[in-house]
Image (cartoon, rainbow, N blue to C red; front, side):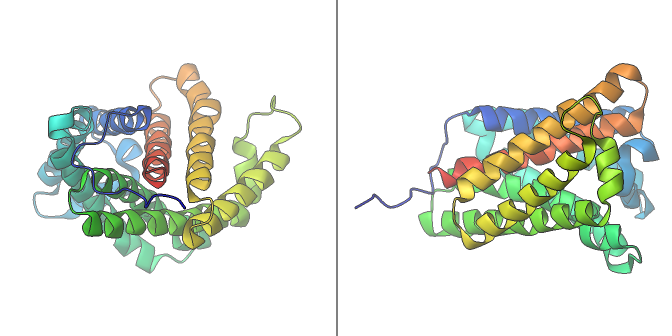
Length: 257
């Protein structure tokens, strides 16, 4: 007979996953504040259209940096997780108009909305790990797991619908071939989605997602950064990919409790 899963710890020990998630949040917020351009902000430039949108956007990115730093410290980690939840919720909402109005399959099934939603799931998982009320912690934890499962469906669909462009991103030097890895990672996202949604081997699925996304960042985007450090879009893609990897890591850590 196994002991019941323990959610609702008022202070969770600092983990490598939390450090990774926080560092990625700091990176994205910092480059967005330094380079206030569409290549860096991508879909989040929709925030600029709001009244005082530039100020709101800068505030959210500053909060992202502060939250990423604060989750590293036990005393500030819980309120920082709340801040990150709010920031990522705002980012997700900023993507809704384009998601609803999307006419192409990529924006409909695999667009930026699900990227931002996955980050929100990571912040929710972090908060659940430190929530003192076990009932609320279970609700937040379940929401994070199911939400990441939905995002994994989106990631699988976006790659399946655009398999050749996905394959083109894979470095040619990795054997056995670009299309092979495009197909394998698409299947991996789909399997992760199923595992997370039905809560079967969810920890393994989330860890696999985190590893796969981190490898995307290192193998796909980092070489482009080395080739051209002034490519703002590449910096943004690298930071976003690492942040989503960190979010999956947060959900994986929660499943082990």
